[in-house]
Length: 51
Image 1 (cartoon, rainbow, N blue to C red):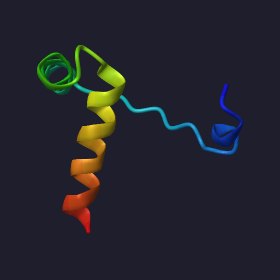
Image 2 (image 1 turned 135 degrees about the vertical axis):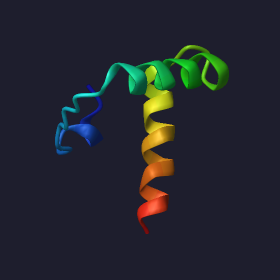
Image 3 (image 1 turned 180 degrees about the vertical axis):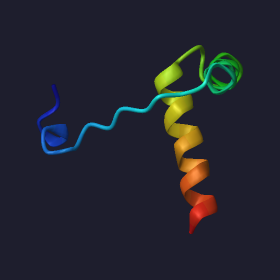
Image 4 (image 1 turned 90 degrees about the vertical axis):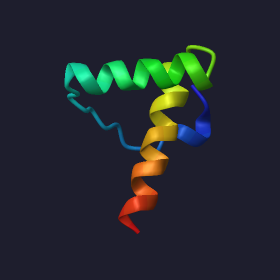
């Protein structure tokens, strides 16, 4: 594990099936099937709408 990430909190989310499908579609289309990258991208978009 990267030492710089050791102090970060862990967050667990429960997602609906339709949300998981949307994440998988974005991962396939934009992130070479990398679900984690798609989730980070979607979270970033959501946070920007909250500002």
